[in-house]
Length: 581
Image (cartoon, rainbow, N blue to C red; front, side, top):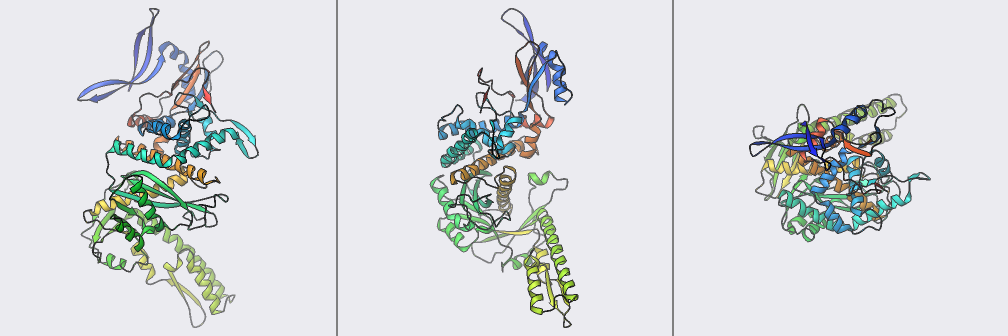
């Protein structure tokens, strides 16, 4: 990129010079130029250049008689989300499905702000107001959202502004089914995929407070919060895109949701035959029967423990028959990318194919988890051993109860065993059978499929995509602040989750465009790089307010080129209506 001066004659006969940022590109074998940004008139820029330079470098502000900097808000991440919003056609979809707003701001513009906030700086509807102070977020016609502060107890945001956001959540969840179908059709048109494999997985998310008793129930907590009520969230992905999600009561069993999801795919999306991809929690004989009764295929992870066939499959492995799997984006970001291998083994069951996967990354993780658990169990046994040796615990049944409690924690029974010597001494030792088996399992998992035509590498790729659903869950809960949930009504709970899943879709689209541009950037890294782009509003002496954007970091420029974004400025708002609440 380079700077170019362009002479433009005015209506009074004078000639003004304008400054443009121009870049060269190649098209059809020819070198062409295009304008990246209009910076304004040369004479005006010369006046404000020293002050702008000080501002962007974080130096002392300008003194009296020089240009006045009115604002310098973070703009790049919102600019990126606006481009993603536009590509997915969400402006039109939301306008059709959400209806007209009673206020000055459309539901679509408010929905954009909610989605951008979840993706850029996840906050609750209360915390969103603070984000509006630092980031430039505006409606389609350029009116900037500003917070309406009003202290009322512990809540610092005016209740009218909060209600506007909550009404938007209500509208979103009321239109959820239609919006998801519209987005699926849009994605299919953009990327020309066929729904051959359907990936489905569940997570749980807990409540601070009681929640709605219809869905907020006690159940198996993946968050380690069994004392909190929760809901289950199931996400359906096709060709790498999250196309639908479901919210279930917190006490539902994973496998019990499968038939409901399959029926929804048929009635709402018109899917005929698909291969259902699910994790270990989905695998029951009833689940497989439901899938096969619907004439669907399956590809599922199998349980490693309490699986009598697993030892035979592992023993049948041939070290010369491993196939190396391609390295994924996340692994490529590491200096020494971990390897994944796969091998098909005889299942021993007609119509069932079994693949054993060996993952270095998973082995490292599971080995570290085992070592931590073993250390905690060893320390507990040493304390028990000291009590017995000191004579503070002598009854055999009491010693056995104490040892049993230790083994029940931290998966201790997988690693250790114990015995009492004839002289009453307590002894613990590494389990001669269980521990070697645990070590042999580390880094290895098993998937099975009913599909005869799928290759081993394709099977791993599809199952890895399912793990990407799990990564999306971590994003939903940790980054987009899905948990904990504070809403009390079912509609608000589901609306909150819907916003999070839509933000996950936008993140997926961003990562897709970055990959296509040859950039090994995660979505989080790209948004962080884009945050170096600021919208600067300033006033020269005795002149009207003006604005422009900072160039940002080189990585920010790469992100904008990947989308591609050429117009960096937000829309100019109507005069006298520069802000909205």
